Length: 169
Image 1 (cartoon, helix red, strand yellow):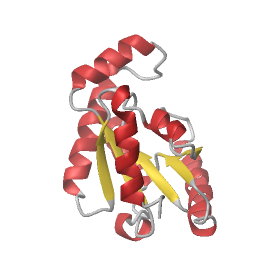
Image 2: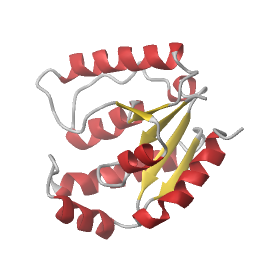
Image 3: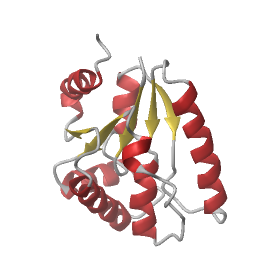
């Protein structure tokens, strides 16, 4: 029992993996701007950290959290204080699933197929690159990198995530 934190840019298949794993999805940080972004982040953070501290016995997945604060702040040049986030401390009892794809061309194809994105493809590309940089920099965090190029390979990815998290023990 427990929770996983799924991180990664738009179009990599986080929601699809969460759904296939039959986990309750809790949306973390959104990928677009609000006028009062700081208050929104504060509310989301308080609620999410309450869940993390008090409901660790439940199987749920967070779709983005503090790592997205770092990445989206950089890409969108937001002036949001993320100094309260201590990544090693905050994630010591959780597991992070970094979902990505092997190339930007896969993201571009998905972007064109979906057509419902709230952000430009240029921003998606920047986010993809920033997530890669982040996980190379913070490679000592408890995470597994899942390359989700083909939705057919999702069963294999789910098996890897389950082994990483030990849901089956």
